Length: 272
Image 1 (tube, rainbow, N blue to C red):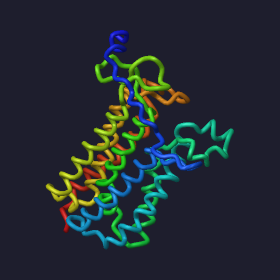
Image 2 (image 1 turned 120 degrees about the horizontal axis):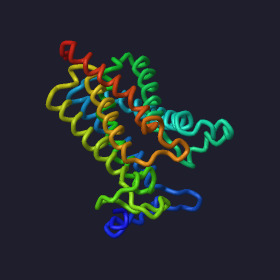
Image 3 (image 1 turned 45 degrees about the vertical axis):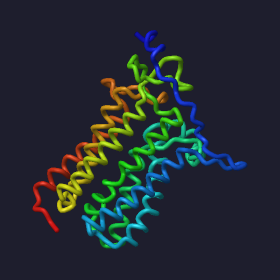
Image 4 (image 1 turned 120 degrees about the vertical axis):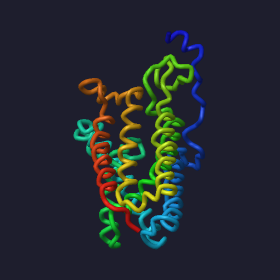
């Protein structure tokens, strides 16, 4: 089966991860994906806040962008160190600061942004759940661009496959693999964004604080758990008991928390 798949497998597009090299400085597609996701999410939050959420002034949303960036970078790196390669960084603590060498965790970034929102909501006297609803609607944009960048980099690829759309990734051996980055871009990015947009704009979900956050958390957890079935486990961790992965275990609290927020929001009366 795999031999036949080699004939039909898609060749990985030779896209240089570096868009532009200016002396010692490199502009990478991955960095541009972060910028596109942050700026796109910020503009979307401004529009949603003005039309539906009416949470706060646009200037406050501008300030939130800065703290979200800090939360993503610090939380993402801390999460990778803690969840995915702690023994290595215990032996090489200074390498934990080398973010330019790669290694970011979505779940760590989520914790970082959550901490930033807690602090930001308290400082500006905003209702935390309404703020998190606003942020949750924008996050899938960043996930979409980020997963596309993972594909461009040829990283976080899937397990071997004989499907006709399997891809021969460089540095991933001779066998075709699931383009799991694209699966995640569609499910965690495009589909989740569409669901949240429909709830916010068509179903007035912003009137039930916590509902959009709950849908986002549970939706991401389900999408991630499904894609992990075909995504190549991290080499330093491998498969965990029962054939599970670290990504699935880290998504379990998201699923439970999301379902609780959905239940809580639907139990409470809608608000203006």
